[in-house]
Length: 465
Ligand SMILES: [Zn+2]
Image (cartoon, rainbow, N blue to C red; front, side, top):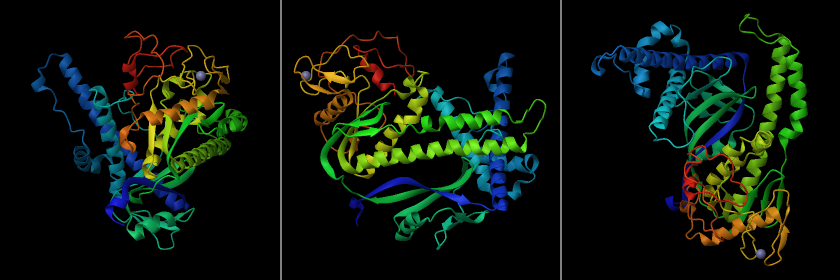
């Protein structure tokens, strides 16, 4: 195959690990070393910032203030290498990649904060980096250099300093690609998640270009809570509600946990063995919910991306919807944002395109038969009845068909037509545009809730994703 039939993507492969107690201790140590370097760098940067602020308050001219220190990864690494014999005399016990993991996280955190403050970074404002705690942070270490290899038996991986680690499942999918030269491992991250250790390989993968089963077909996908997704074809994907199913069990475990002797930092009381055991059980129960959810979402998005040439979804304001405390748990459990994220990259992989309808496009209130837009449609009305043409259709199927119809109005092909993140600003309104929201009633990042039924909003707001 030539370059034209290939698509180069960054993709990761994650495998669960079986670790010996010695290996687990080594990993916990590496993660601790990463945290040490991170906290050391942050403390130093904060000290300089505070010193400069204090000097400014005394009226010392700008040129005579304490010199700033570098925030970039190379600068932090240089400073760490000077300081490590004093701050971490044990530094030789761990791979240099461990310290690099921590310093890289710090450099990125600082850059995100600076870019967010100067307006270079979109999205929610990023906070200033905070100190990592042994109890609360996820232990992780990333290796970018040295021996990173999948063994010939495909059941073991070799990482620098840690040596051979046993995998829970065969790594043949990645091993085959590496041997065929269609994948290159860029880095390996070992991380604990839900009480289990995983290794995740970030790879540059040359994927064969392919086309969906029906390249000319468009499907509209209406996401909701009653049904997870309703397709314009009439297919209904039920909402599995994994968290709702497990919530009784989670409550029972948590209640048991509250009756056991937990840690108390004020009195320096250590947690009891029973508390620790129960904590592990709770973590596993949460991890199971997350695994079930991930599996279901991947199956749904793969089916869509391999089946249809064009997929049209709505740009849901998930962050705004989560502010509704009655629905937040169920919205989080459904994973709307994750569906969108997966569809964005999977349509690229499988040769389709993803179109995102404007946040204010009235998909539910428009008649899919004649295009009349209703001014009012209560959420309780589950059936759409058109007074103009007499169409009677399930509410969600009607919305999905309106979304599918939008595909015809967007010219061109390929996923470049729309970027994955921003809404399509050119989505045409079939009906008259209703009352505009007054400028200033909603600010960027605070677009909050979906506007009341029967009103659309000022279109400038669509860029505020
Ligand atoms: Zn109609």
